[in-house]
Length: 138
Image (cartoon, rainbow, N blue to C red; front, side, top):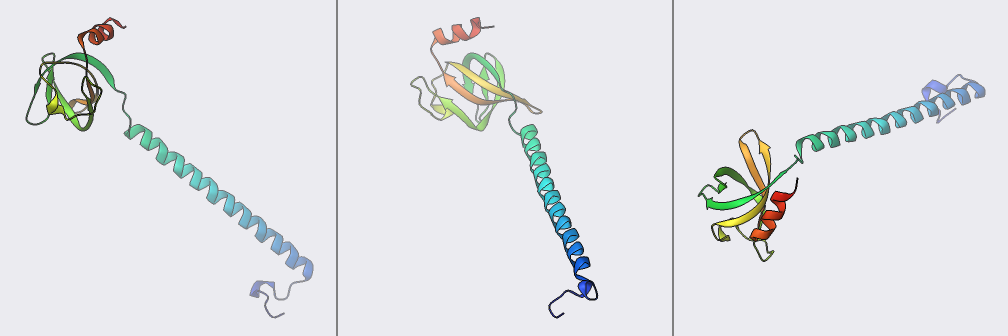
């Protein structure tokens, strides 16, 4: 009986077959539990990403009158921080730096509310007609 594991020595063939079947079932159950655990952990991590990531944005429009040295802006006499990765679009539809906008500028913007205040994530310079359409929407 060389080559047999120590636990199989002294067993009959039917006992060995029975024990082998139990071991296969254990391996299968262990494999299924491991796969299920990986699935649960990945779902848990995805859930945290959803909570931490995309906050709902609020849309607004108004007149941008000031850009401060710290990157914050004044729109309709209200102060907003501007996210460094915010998208800034000029009247021609091109992505530009915030400081390249001519002041005063009519803008549409999107912001999120954070513990520190309102943070703009998108600004688009528009013509007056587009502003009136936004304000008339419910």
